[in-house]
Image (tube, rainbow, N blue to C red; front, top):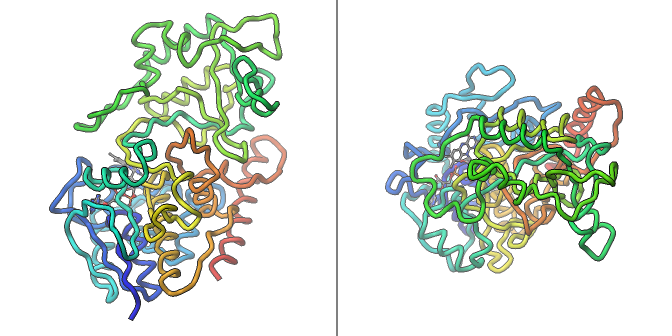
Length: 443
Ligand SMILES: Cc1cc2nc3c(=O)[nH]c(=O)nc-3n(C[C@H](O)[C@H](O)[C@H](O)COP(=O)(O)OP(=O)(O)OC[C@H]3O[C@@H](n4cnc5c(N)ncnc54)[C@H](O)[C@@H]3O)c2cc1C
């Protein structure tokens, strides 16, 4: 008789983890608090409920990193992808689904699996012994979050994300921007040139503030803001407090000399800081925002140097419980201080239905392998799943860690030239390489 795997949270990640482990022959108990205890976003007692959009985003597995993740999950017999395809709705290149039929189908599959039992009720404490996966998502219940916090330390479990937009380094115009840390701080040349700097004249700054104030914003959900707003104000709120606020805050021009025009003093400077070890992604420092996505792209492209910027992810501020995974988790997604506990899904610092389900798939397989006396290495970083798990368990900068969507900036770079056309071909090269690596890993 095999040992049992317990999973807390029957959302995207927990449902996929339960399915994968049970398919490998390991008995699973899935603990889900709904419908007894609800959240502000969930409406039903179904497993794998989609809380907002009904889309799993792009289904293009040749030129899109999310589509590639779909492909990998299907190749690994993922339940979430199979049920999504069964209940898909016409949506162009996106994989959109009938959310109720989809969630009901996932629930039915799990409830009828001979090795899975579902226990309804909230788990309020971090388990002491046994084998566990915690997949309680962005809205982890308060009692369990407190218990996790007691184990990890207060600074290692966040209750909000405040995501600054992230730009592909290669899309920044370096004939306008330059590399320099404020006051050239740092011991090594690498540290002294750690930031990309985008300079603004007075006119450019004034036009930027006007656009920021006029841009369309999203609202917080009811009950979402409690305990927030302590040190991560959205830039548009800072601009509302006074036109000069940003120039004396995240856009201050001091300690910087424009490498292209050393005699010209910038009126304001936007700084971008390296976001991953590969150096392919840079985040816009202090630029967390509630602007709508379309507005963000339009406003940020006004920044000199970012006219042709490609965004790996746009900014946002949400209620979101997540761990500082780069410091807390090993490459098996185990809590380093309590290796009998794995984490999976959005609580590990990935973002989105697909990414969360993918991390559930890995955690389920890794936990089952361990219970069967084996070790399953993570997929190679050239794959979408491998790129994500590498990022959250060590590739990301731990100090500034914020939740991440899958994107090609997380993959080891492939060299290809030729402007826009070249980029499209390069994406195909990324996905070809990933599919070969994933197939080899699976076998
Ligand atoms: C308001 C909001 C809107 C969002 N919109 C989108 C969107 O449009 N598109 C997108 O891709 N992503 C969206 N997300 C992110 C999305 O929720 C996640 O990416 C995805 O659902 C995370 O999967 P998960 O399995 O980690 O968590 P969830 O799917 O949230 O599942 C976690 C489960 O754990 C249960 N649970 C929590 N605490 C306990 C406990 N103590 N005991 C037992 N069970 C517990 C919850 O009831 C839930 O069923 C949104 C998130 C929020 C909060």
